[in-house]
Image (cartoon, rainbow, N blue to C red; front, side, top):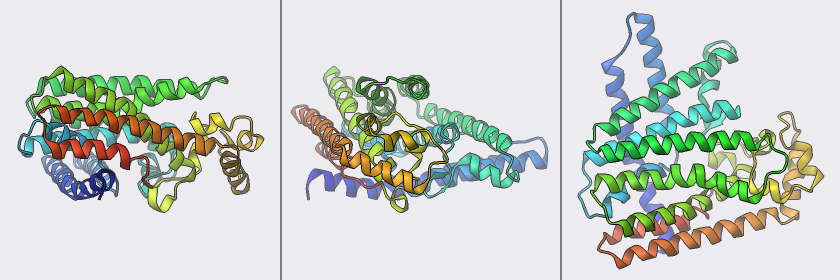
Length: 350
């Protein structure tokens, strides 16, 4: 079993452990209750139950695992404080997805309805009310995540989370802005992937774990930051590939939405001179026939192969950077996981 396969197995074993803790937290929050009337309490309870269901749908929980293994680098025992921090990170991720899905007008997330679509069913198709609920529930869950992390007793970890979420907001603003530009470049795409995925998915949870573990060695911080930048880019390049060529029954999301929404991906950029791509890019009413033709064009022109090759190159750089951790006095199992994830994330189908 290579490190990538080992990391995949470790991550699969992590999922049920964190899911039961997420469910326990939301159950406690529901029991705590909030509201000044029975109707208000019902609205809050429904929002929390939906958030819990969304966050515990089948998924990787990669970010939560990075909290655990960032902490484990220092050799400390994994206690409930670390699990709380991992839950907090997954909660903030779920909250941001509620906002992101509304902005992207996605209908499917992890095999179920996105938050605004969930509330659209409740509000008899009223899109404005449903989208307002996606913002409101997302805001509430985001703050609950911050509160839970703060209870772990590390001001450094809390500041890390707040700064990362702020930077993610800047990254999202850049993402939205790129869709309005007509001359975006590969440099723009790479900058976007670093501003969002590398910081939010890799660096932030790893650093939260490191802060909770009291690791202050500047060499460790530098290695993890370099690893996060390359690993995050590799992850997002693969995510964009799955966003066009993935199987919805495995990914839990549409394989058409990136094209229909006009997402600024490397795939689209490298196939930009193909009329089949222009015919569907940013067209929400694109036909099945035209979408299939655009995907074929992306394959035929080499855009797919270019993106896949680049993803593997970045993954290789990340794995090589993680190898440097072995020169330091750190937990070997944690290093194996961090290094293995870089390899597994570009071969995954979900």
